[in-house]
Image 1 (tube, rainbow, N blue to C red):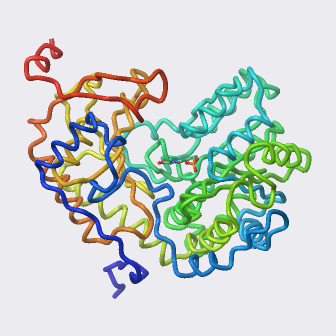
Image 2: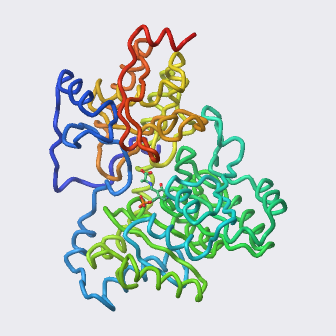
Image 3: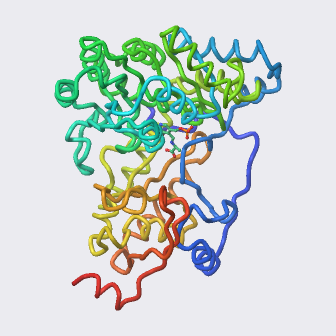
Length: 460
Ligand code: F0G
């Protein structure tokens, strides 16, 4: 009989205490943070699920490699390790290190896009969209329709709508589309994977029209494992072989090594185009650093070189995907509405369905996130009306799981807290804004709970 218990495939050598607070303390802390969890001191958080970016635990192999970091300004040995590891998996000719993902995005779009251009993607992450818009181009999301329905089950909800891509190219013309992108996995769409079949189809359309295809590769290892689990012809392939095949259908990528690079900082930009690579390196030197370090220390390059390979280990990926699903399935089985099926790096609570009595303009996602903190010291993040304004199509609360950081008992605790909040959901009230910045307001917004009279007033 196959063994059913999936354990963390590591043991713990170094521990970091986490701090309990009382409910009274959390009430005060939340008020002082104006109900915005970004404004909380991290020490006052018990389980921090704000992001899976840069928050992972490194392995002994990574720490050992870091000690050997070569801090030479030019031609560092650590860059060779980094480039070789990236090339081994991604296969692209030019590997340009950057301090994190958005630095790679800024350089890529600066070199490839101009005002009036259009960039299609399954769904742009916010920094990707912002960097495209910053050069005056338009970022267009083309997820399959199933990707926009939280409760719907589909194995590859991250897929791009290939028909919509063809239609876009026909409508705006190939000349206005300098590149197309695929985000694996689709973070803004619930951490959902893209099928190899979809990658092939998107690549074929791009090749037909001579449009370069780039991957936003942040969670490529998780996406590769989903392909192995859900596309029968890949069942016997190794995650690394799957990743290699996937990247082979593209012309380059941007990457935040803070996710599947298993590092606390780092990123890179890859391309097969010699001319573009030259222009990108020129820009890199201007703001990031010399092309053999790109804003990173030699030791950071070493950590990423090792981390990328560890992220593709099958025992790790099995644990990673299973433990995220464990959280999702345990709350969903009790009726808690989540984006289905569970994603790779996070579970997304559907706050509009969780709190149907709180309308979007009263920020149901923020109210739910605040309640999870009050109940159990858990920090999550709202992805909804506070983040996107009235344009938000959904109000979600993302519980992102840092890599190799929390154990199953931590997750059991999170399940218990969510279910407790679910039981008394009818008592949860919405909030109103007392301060907002002119852009990216969610990071610094201040809110306060609505009075009972205001709740009623808002209802009519
Ligand atoms: N692309 C995707 C799909 C991302 O999820 C992120 C970051 C980036 C690009 C930018 O990378 O942070 O290294 O500059 N996502 C983090 C998150 C911040 O919490 O989802 P970065």
